[in-house]
Length: 282
Image 1 (cartoon, one colour):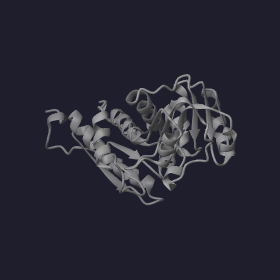
Image 2 (cartoon, one colour):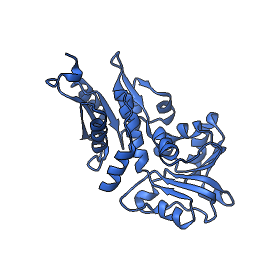
Image 3 (cartoon, one colour):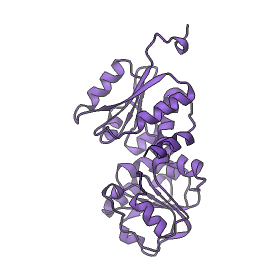
Image 4 (cartoon, one colour):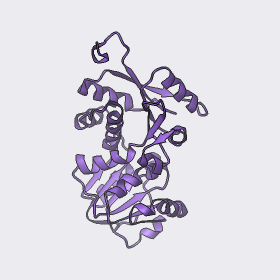
């Protein structure tokens, strides 16, 4: 009898590893995906001590685990641990999805960028191609989404960061993929953008980056990679400055999870009902 019907066999095990991990929505999301697609699996959240990540990953797969998501602060360590990396993960310098291939090698993927693009483009009907894009922040969150963003062929992309040198460096790292540059927030004076994406940590501190009031082109969209029960500070800023759409990152969270689920299971779940379920539970 195939494993599909062998209910004596334990369900396939998946998990998310991070520190802290108690607020993770991933178990709720993947449990909903499994229910929707008829996949038999369990998905748990595992808090890992700093310094213990490599051992925790090794133990998980040695015990028969099938796949892992990785969150803060271990995405760079997951990248280093992976023996094989997807092109998007290679460029991102970070991995949020781990699995083993048929040869038992650890494979690292990064689904954050495709999650962002799918939420903007597919869930909300937004355009990236040919648009002037501002990406705020030059840390891991920004680096992780640059390759998929540039693959959408914006007319140009500017990275703004409080430490301008980091934005300039990040732009140089991806210069072969499209028209992009970097600098400080003071360099935004007199510029207009069609799509503004906040990948900075400002929302976590209840702040908004120092943005000029006349930054939005007519019909501009604003997207905050953070989310919460209440509109984030950047979403509030966008609404106050006349953005055509002001979106938070809950859809991105669900879309990146859906891409991980597809990589692991070969089945693509419907994300809209899960986004709605999550939104109602915030």
